[in-house]
Image 1 (cartoon, one colour):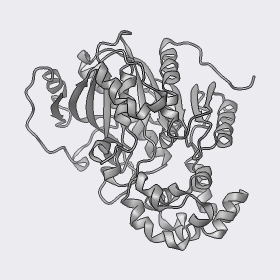
Image 2 (image 1 turned 120 degrees about the vertical axis):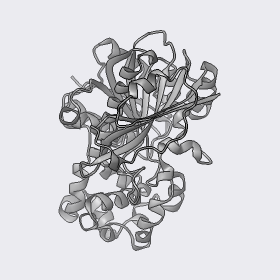
Image 3 (image 1 turned 90 degrees about the vertical axis):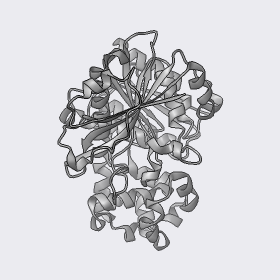
Length: 423
């Protein structure tokens, strides 16, 4: 049963009073959320909190049947409260921006204090309608993230699931595979969740332990957060990282999953400018009109039907050749510079990581993932690499669930991180 309570944030004054009224308050009258232009709040500030519903153990487990498939059903130990948040993050030019997130809170978890897990979505699309937080409005949820993530809270882990920057910005697409904005959103989601628990202590005890993870693009975002945390949010006590089919380097994605390239080119053209990206030199002529049409309007399920999964069909001959031969730095220096700027995870952050890979993954292939793992090990991280041989790209989430839950619990307990890195 859905029980909605809406609390709008009037410049943060009175937020504690509004939240304190939540358990007994009648449904609040609808009010328009504040515009980002009207806000002068620091990153991580809460703007809006909506209490959505309580899911029973049975509801969490039953809903998980679809996203978990043959890798389920997951063990669920406690009920889950679901919230919708809006919080402040940093825009592309340093301005105030507001993004949405779903929050899954354990109800009376057996362990008492709960660690926090910030999870980034895989590719859903660039348009507002494709935002992960709006998946329930679509005929078929793109990633079934609500049903997938509630079981983490059902195992005692406070789990927050933010949208990326751009989904609530009129006239601008999602900042897709843009490392800085992804890092800001992930870190500010952790700040906002911490602020909510501070103002509403009856939600439970939140441990000072944060793990960040994500699927595909979300893995890129999680590792970006580790790279930027020392400068952007040093107070966030980041204890480790989890990637499920993580795409931490966009250049190999152009070769292994070319039907995502129009999304990248459309988004990066909006961020960096058309001259640096130079789309006509990259995409075959027939796909150029799609940059202002399909790439900015259709969600990923439809995009995978429109765009080719073939390097020669997607790109110009010169770009396809440079991509295969590894000569982008010489032949396409502008695009090569953007690929390098938006690689994530290898800053030497030293955080432990669990990397879940699917042996049947054709989007992020084993050699690509294993090169990243080797580089992460060399950069000083303890990395546990788990290759599930029968798993495809989308299977990495359910296939890695139990390993991830155990790994998060170990970080919360302060146990040494396991490593499959060579000695």
